[in-house]
Image 1 (cartoon, rainbow, N blue to C red):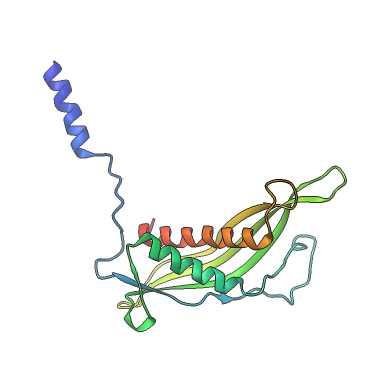
Image 2 (image 1 turned 30 degrees about the horizontal axis):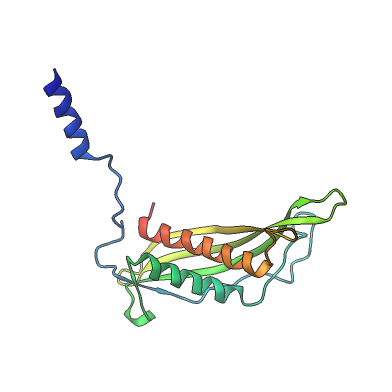
Length: 177
């Protein structure tokens, strides 16, 4: 009885649970190019009851591009290359940059904001010209307090939100769920 029990535990241990950290990308994809993030925020759109906190931060698309490149370099599975040397290309459009109030004081002053960066992203295999994955409304976020010992600036929160969306882009590319 004990032999069967130990044998079954050994089988389960050797078999694993089926999870792997191996990339699901096609074998020929070893490098990637991150195209500059295009800004598609429509600033001429009228402010409405639903969209009254729409803002824009100049240069945020450059920060997002750099965050995605840095994340690919940090992750290390794919080599970041120039467009003519890459096996795959990340193409992203900045669709929205939102700063929504999260918390108010008793006097109705805003104490905390949630910052969202929304992208429309696709990754394309250069060799086959096939889209490996596409996602509209891929969102990175961060919150920031305006006062107190944990207060931060919107610039710091924007950098964190850019890093968050970059992490999501890289994970989705490498893992292709």
